[in-house]
Image (spheres, one colour):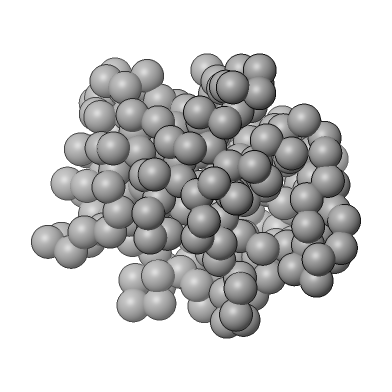
Length: 250
């Protein structure tokens, strides 16, 4: 099982999360590419630390929305969205290469991630960007999403993702952050849920009903309070349960 986290999400002197500590725990780093968060200095530093830590570098692409942290939907023309995603991939690739590695996968961020679960035009725009840039790059997304279906149809490698610290609807989609209970905080309970996900057991949805998720990668959000402790307990619980923790894109 891969364990990923959203990293590099500060901007200038403003910091968010403990990138260095998380890079000592996770196996894949979704590095912000400057549109919803991050800047050149942060990308350079996080890529260097990721390589030093043996963590795979992924491009966390999103809407150009620094004030809203990429969590507001933007009704973009598909061609413009494709160009923005290519721009972000190229920016992070430069810093990954300087660090001695390369971008190994792509994961949309925030509102874009949620939009392309159902938004066919925007999903196609993101797929077009990856195909144009490097069709060997795997893409992370929500199981059952339009995005993963279109990516698979285009010949891309798709990776189903689940979220350690988020509540799920009975349909297997994420509960909106605007609703109470959308973000989970108890590290022990989160770790138990992740073991269940990794081993095919049931978890509880937001209504308390049974839900089965079968991810290939589990995300711990770097901006969740206590993210480092959550990630540590998740990794320890997975290892104790006999689950090998390793990057899906070595």
